[in-house]
Image (tube, rainbow, N blue to C red):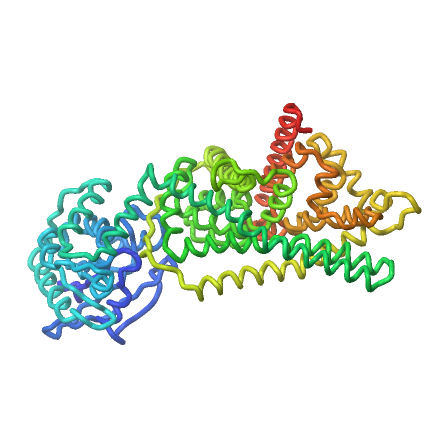
Length: 619
């Protein structure tokens, strides 16, 4: 009894060019639907063999192995094994390999070949491999794999007839013998070693550029040498944040001061003048002055992304994250959280394991977002001397680097605790495609920096502006009697006095207590809040001309400053982050848990820092 037309399936890693090859082979003879019971797309079409006979061709989702870690990979495994509802088991498997990334793609190819089923290999994108300086010997690769290897360029329809003919031969083999001849199964490390040997054996020639890139990967991805290179690069970034930004910061600071002086000279003494100088210009300007540091930080991030190094950093971090129960799938969301936790938390949707995803959401606020940078920068500049620890290594950049590392270490420790308690579970596997090295374009870098600058300035012109004005109003009403402290008499002062009782044991004064409240709207507001608070109570001209850093040194001890930095390493981020967490977890349970544990960590570590500093005579 006939079971219907023969079925061939395209299988391979993501980005191997399967969809392009599928479209080229089937043309308009396609049907697209979902597999029964899952939301994974099913693409099937009719392939005509050289004899004119039809074969049903199925384009399977990209997969890195049969140990499925996503719904796509699970469907691919089930279809190949004949376990997927509504899909017969393929008679012929067509493994699609990216010729320019042969070594990685041969790992999964071996796993497919171990099934012993009729198989053909399509060595796709040979034109891109040639462009990258690689010449692959398809015959040598065929001898290594034990199956036909056909060179193809799907977008140019090269090799399609030869591939159809090879499928026909494999189809005849399937028809003649229904019993598969299974090959010897090997471990994943053995497959990786064999993949490297086969790729090297099939490579006839490579350019010097390709050899240099291979050597770079051997260094940058080395389990012992790679991490020091990564941390050395990050160290240079944070040194540059302070060193390169200072001239631009001084310029912006000078412009803000000049604008304040102009307003004072043109307007008579009044609440309106004070609102403009102390509230709007002083508060918002205190944040905008840190725009150069933020742009320098993002410049390095954009360069690392454009050159292909960021993906390699993710590969290195995967080893560290596996030790705390997470996988490399969590790295991209956590990396995004260094810019802002909101897109980072939203990016966790790509994590298939629910406990893995929840853990990543809960630790995302511990990544030091760009909103914390102004807070760190103003405190470090005020209290940490700009001295050289080593040639080219400044103490201020070293402290900033330490704060970022503290956030990362804190996140990893929290993840370890969570994965062994309330989100207990095994880490899921992770494989990623490494992009090719390339030089970033000036246009792309400029566009990326402009977009981030606009986001920062828009935030300063809306949320920070609004919060600063509201805080100024709360600080100025009701009006104090002549000779009395305006902050003491104000509504904000009364609120801060109540909160100060709670935070006083960890070294925080009333001014800090007042800054902590609006900082929940946006981290940068802590800077503008401090600037506004000190400006409101400064009546003499000399005090009005003092920079925020000088005001902090006048009112704070070094122990308090260090405790303030420790607080912001762990304190919850803005209310928008909490709102996104609620949306992504469908309730208030986990956002409430996040707020609770982060505030507890912030209070505990700020206190430990303050008490330790006082014990060493820094209070």
